Length: 286
Image 1 (tube, rainbow, N blue to C red):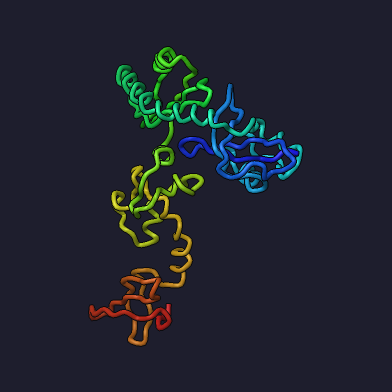
Image 2: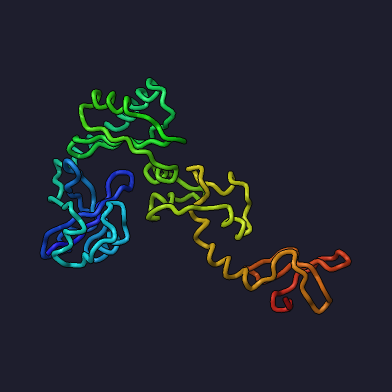
């Protein structure tokens, strides 16, 4: 029987692999494993097994096999997940991985030197060795498409391995590098948020927040992911209130809405004589 396993690698990168066994609990969360990848092997840690991993795999389209067939405890699971978990990682395997991680800072510096030498408009964010050293992936950001063919040949000669340059966005960079947000906590995109959703200024406007991008942006320079969290609540609550600028009827006559407070359920009004006052929502007839 084949089960699906979710494995995470450096920089919150994840993949889904088959695990042929009669007992899905034989692999536990955070177990280090050696997995089969394109042209070699890699080392990662288990983050989900069994039905949970299968459901997450079905929602994921990164491998190009979506929509996935049902993978819940059935032999045909291998149809959707072509690569497999080879074995648990040994202490020796983990030492090799640790040595590779320690060399990646030096690799990144060398790559940046070569980028400056080729005068390319790109910023190198991270470098990641595959566990068997058969591939070196360089992550970079750029404002436009970059012709890096000459750079790839240069790096292949320098590191004597297959080179992959992968352009990522600002949110993906924050996910890989991690950090602390404006709230003082770990970045959501690097801790628990599966993937970043597009965020627009309209979300901030609906919530009555500042429309100055510098005040509602995260370390990545993009609008805060958390603007999505309470947006549905604001939209639903505002439907109960009159819009700002609308003239409403109160016991004192016709007055214009200046502002609303959805949490205290109060409305600020201005009368024809210019005076203002605050009324509970229930006392206003729209």
